[in-house]
Length: 430
Image (cartoon, rainbow, N blue to C red; front, side, top):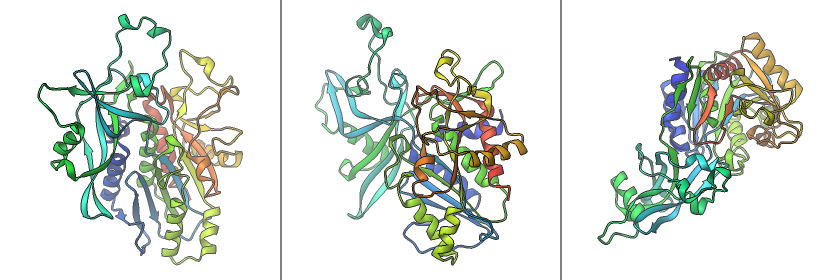
């Protein structure tokens, strides 16, 4: 199997929640010699070194201060997002229905709900425990790493019109089964006890949690010619992997390279760790100040920056080609998609596109242009959002997928190699 495919499949397997995605990327950064910086510390930076900042556990910002950081018009920035549509566990989640134990959940982002039924599911995320100070609780990551819940469909014999179309109700149709009610009296805080056992702690030590359901089915290479990848969470782990790959393998000697992988894209990005917050420009300013630049120098670098925003695109569907634009129809194996939209839901203009096209043509990277049908409103991503606080030239790109926002998505395997190559040359060419 191609090494880059294996790296993507490994990223998918270990990324059971955005917390675990950030944990894996930090591991790879530290293996490459990157040093951690705390947001609240005063920074001392040295040229020739890589650094990273863990932003509230689910957003990661890393940067490489090259030998001559002052050379060049601005920062070279690659961005993506660490979250995906899924189901999340509510507080007080225990639900008893007859002899069944269920969990109360809510939808996060725009998931294709039906694809979450009848699958082996597990739970991962962050649990917050009592600490030595009320202002410093302990945080523990948790991943059950085994199927412990499932959401069963209603049999067709009891719902004869199921294949005629059905509107799924998250509150009634999507509650996962976690087990049976035993005959003996059980504690009403059943799920809290389950968490406590898994963490080897006491239930009353648990204060709160951010927990996600995830599909435990492993990603795999499929197709007669082994040229496709079927896996959960390809949106947007493909982009996280490509940004990290380019950042670690680029060979520029001048300027400052940055990757920023944000949480909460799937619900609008308007959080403290989202692309719509001030956290990213604040960190860029901290970099500048630590290098001794004036605010005027920082603003000049900011305005002269170039951003590649990585998020997946829609491939033309083999069974529904009519859903695609009539002249721009990228297939899954088209390489990298340059995403364009005249109302700026994708932050792309002709001058910025020309730069990416030049990188692709000069380095034999396959690419295509993507626009939505004029009568179908497409999704949006973080490129246009981040331009509100960093008004730099920006291009939205991504791997073309089928079944986007399903519990399991499909891509051409070589597309990862093409996006990796683009991000590598982006962080290589001066």
